[in-house]
Length: 228
Image (cartoon, rainbow, N blue to C red):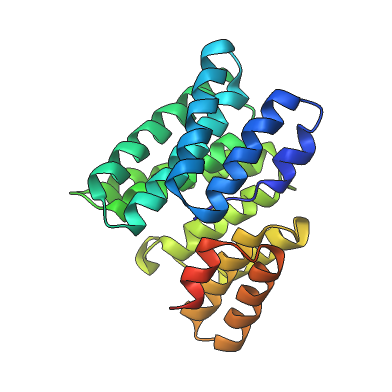
């Protein structure tokens, strides 16, 4: 569940230390397997200890824990999923404190709030729903040409109840903007497929899933949605 890595890799290709961690994260987000995710977490934990004032390390650590949450939830391990989510939210908030001008970080925070709602709990939606809107608004203000921002907006519109702003057509439009800006993001194509399926367009959903698997044949996320 969630998020394209390609832009981050391209932007940070001159940083070998970060690139090594991103390679571990890429394997983890593709397979949602425990070992690469745990290896990536250990790597970025050490990186944040080495350079605690570097927001990028905290941002990537939050992404790792987001995927760990998704992997645990997929195996119905709610306790581990919730612990990973708590860690991801704290890490993302810390990254924002270090660098409030990052659209990526605000978009991730919005996604984390949305995922937290998905994990359930009393009054969770009422508490975090407005925070999703605020974080995505801030991200869009910071960078109106960022594929991750549009992908997060798509998830906002897809996940919210209609009475609270949910709109499947707006979700599809934002996912389409995202993949137009980053046509290599297999995950966003999966989200586009989910939105098309919710709208009732099976052919468009299958086309998007096929593209996701063409881009990343090992994607556990795409394979899971293909079976739905």
